[in-house]
Amino acid sequence: MSPFIAELIGTMLLILLGDGVVANVLLNDTKGNNSGWMVITTAWGLAVFVGVVVAGPYSGAHLNPAVTIGLAIAGKFAWGSVPSYILAQMLGAFLGAFLVWIMYYDHFKRTNKPDAILAIFCTGPAIRNYISNIASEIIGAFVLIFTVFYISGAQITPSKTPIGLGSVGALPVALLVWVIGLSLGGTTGYAINPARDLGPRIVHFLFPIKNKGTSDWQYAWIPVLGPIAGGAIAAIVYLQLK
Image: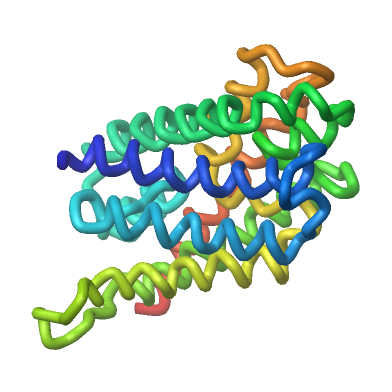
């Protein structure tokens, strides 16, 4: 598997499972309707685990343009590979959201809540204040990427581990995303990933969904620029502390 395909598939799985849990919780007549924030944040963390397990051996499993850019700023990733990784992540996020649209097609038709439908595909603020909203995304992404710098050097020894225990290396990142969601996700829905928000938002915009309302493009720049800024700051701080 090439790094491009790995990033595409890993991000697709991340969004399929992440947006999928939001659909399960928010849409009418699902088995998981109204099961709450704990279910959403837990599944997002596990979705990261799945994406990292699949893509990690082939691409390093960035699955996030903010991670890719942050690693490049820190000198841990080649700048020449940044555009192809971001393209793969955007395409993967789009495909993952498209699969959620197919999966929950009947339930979308039974849900007359435009805000809930939009929340399945992309993030939005609990209180709309662009200054505090972008600050939330910067802080969340900073925590994610700053911590990733310290996780990435860990290794499981000996190298030959039984029953695929090498995959356990993906667990710290999953736990990290889980705690960010639980602790910091209540303000904006913790995009902390430009592809996670923009790719699915495009799906929401393009495909027919009954009662879907607007795609809220006036907010869309925050979950793109905020995580990138947070990742850049994390890289700069990390370099200063090395």
